[in-house]
Length: 79
Image (cartoon, rainbow, N blue to C red; front, side, top):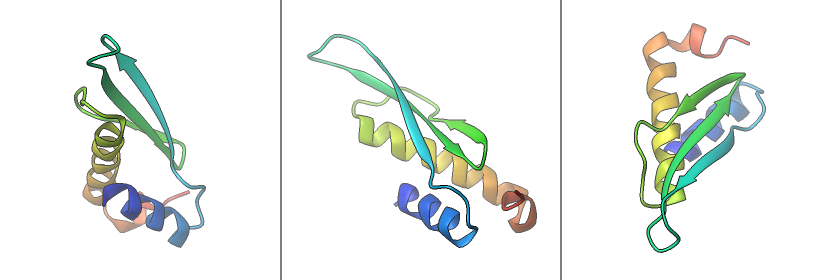
């Protein structure tokens, strides 16, 4: 849900689509992931390690959306 909302915000605002990166740690049988998302030149990070890459990316997108919403529409969409 958060990844989709962040992508839609980028498309509405004519920004590049968000790009995700990840850090993986732990053994192969129990990896943990922490993700970052780059949106409009800013990088946002998931607050904790997650059991799957998908959850880590969702957490990073949630952090980005919450931060952008706190700033308000005009500053969140400033180029």
